[in-house]
Image (cartoon, rainbow, N blue to C red):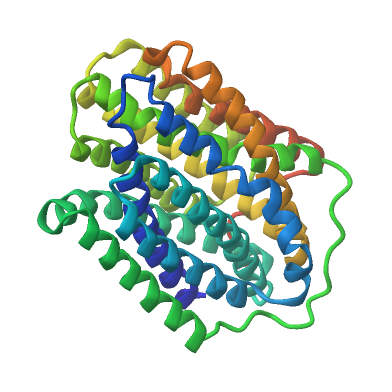
Length: 377
């Protein structure tokens, strides 16, 4: 499990750096209401439609580590392509679409991988490892974008993409050379018939929340005459909040219940109010910290419920199908956001609140999941 956590953290570090560089470059064309950035954000989720169909049989035949290795090879090729086309906005949008195709494959495979490894542990330990995973991943997603502006300033965009491609290549070799054994022979659980729709909706809202955040952040910074480093720092605030949620919920001794969801909901509401009443970007850092804490907590709870209730193959299928619903949600969200650019900050907060309500519906039907083993055990 610990090697898996390290590898997934390195992957998020490199991914965060790449995504920041692409989004910041595309946000430079503000005269057309950030059309290129909006188009890239929407096209990023088109793979969610066809990736489940492409990988349906693959998910049944291969384990998460093998699928991850294939996805990483595609990401390496995409970074090399960005090395050649980084100055052409149209081609960058096209390559961004390709790299997100592999990102979606990897997101499904990482979840399958985690669920497969988790089957070797007691059910009470699964939420704890989920908390560790979210904490490590969010720290990596925070550090990657912060490092990106300095590397780009020192080396330029072309060399930056080569460095990132080399990093992904090294990660690929480790995954291929040291596959992590997943628990064999674990019987698959049938999908739960009660409360599954609420959990599915919560999973479907994860990517639209992140996608709308990735769109609004460079837009808001541009509107306030900020820099690429400002984007990285605000993104870091969100990641710190998500990492903090991982730490808090790793110590949470209660079941996933109404209390946990209410705790998270209050955090999201406070973050919304802070962004509503403040005007300067630097004053909104704490708001993003609270949003990150709430959203990170929701991802931890959703992941714990998913791993607890479903078998490995069913996890892959459910995550893929939920990702396919993310595209129409994001298209509608960004279409509304571009009507009044100044209010593009609102969608991530609203979607996070809807996600909290969906998880609340899931646990109200099926009950919670213990976050830690009891002292007697």
